[in-house]
Image 1 (cartoon, rainbow, N blue to C red):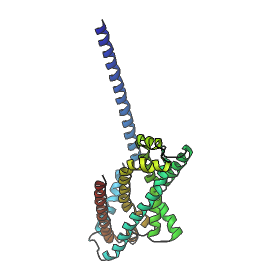
Image 2 (cartoon, rainbow, N blue to C red; image 1 turned 90 degrees about the vertical axis):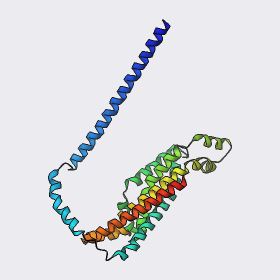
Image 3 (tube, rainbow, N blue to C red; image 1 turned 120 degrees about the vertical axis):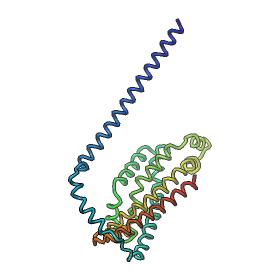
Image 4 (cartoon, rainbow, N blue to C red; image 1 turned 90 degrees about the horizontal axis):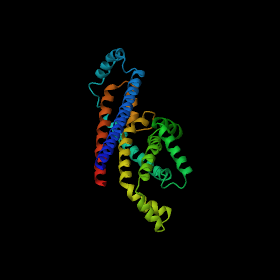
Length: 274
């Protein structure tokens, strides 16, 4: 009798587990279907399925491609300094973003924030900074400090603080609490706990995020240049405004080549830091 009861209980448990798995599968399928429906609705609202619009745009695209050939290399020397400025903007912007993000991340992480109110206030600030695009900040800083690379650096430094600070805070939040508890039990101060128990754990993640943001900043540094914040983006928008598409066909591959180099250097640094 006990064997039968045990077998019945086992069968009931298996059936309940199977039913729960099926219910979870149906829920995941429903969520996936809702996501696909939302994507299709967004594509429809933006006119993606308007075949006539694409057909009408083909002649203009063909004409644009024709005007981009052959490429005009006559001004290549004039683009070397803007490319160097773009690289300098990406490095300087990343450095400033890291300097600003680190203390904000410590205040935004629940395990290092001095008070929950401070944590929520800092997270609100980080969310606000993420919501302001680089091009808007570029316009504001151009109006404040004039044209050149400086407003581009300031725009690239301030906007990423919201995202970099968020990534840093999440890495700090998921640090192993055991070394922290051990440091506190040994009588370490709050600063010593952070420098000796928290940061050594998350330093590899912070380094990876920093290098990734540097590679991203080089790509993004062309955007502030569109509004006069220096760099190769300024040369690109100037060529577009003057409809010199044969020069655009040279500037774009130059940007692409530099992005590939920066990504390769970033990948190399990530491997060496692991």
